[in-house]
Image 1 (tube, rainbow, N blue to C red):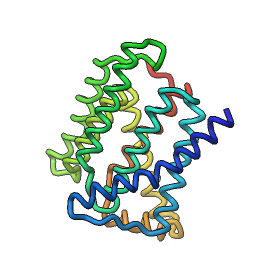
Image 2 (cartoon, helix red, strand yellow; image 1 turned 90 degrees about the vertical axis):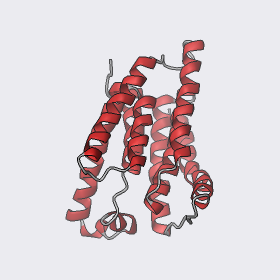
Image 3 (cartoon, rainbow, N blue to C red; image 1 turned 30 degrees about the vertical axis):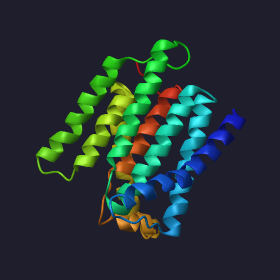
Image 4 (cartoon, rainbow, N blue to C red; image 1 turned 45 degrees about the vertical axis):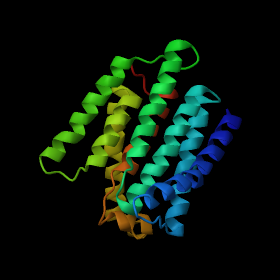
Length: 225
């Protein structure tokens, strides 16, 4: 248990600098430059390491752990890109979809290698998450096309109920962020939080919420039937 946690912690910490390599390339391809303040980089790396530790504790050394670690890696790319330039690259959305299909087909062909995959639940998650994020956009809400596409693949890769749980977790994270911003002035002056007062990227919240939902389900803290 402790060894798995430490391995997950190290992988989670490593996911940030590795993801920055891809983020830099993706942004340069769009004529943008990746700029990160040191404080933001430290906070982001610590959060990634924490999620990695949770992955190790929940899934151990397994294909399922690899699947979630890959989602964490892509989530880091999405978060950094969205915070830095308000861009969610299409390549990250496609990568999440392809990774889910790869591991899902593996689960179908080799039962027991991974938790079973129900393609219908993935499609249901895809449809429901699309509606949840598309409707506010149609009503003039501040939901961009990138947010909607990300929500679609989060629903597909998480499946229906974990995807809905991710939406709940995202709401909680946003509320916590709002509380910190308004009620704890010292933390509210941190560069990352201060920046988000004027520019609210949804990608980081959704990606973190997806990992959190999968951790809760994997650890048995929440039973999804």
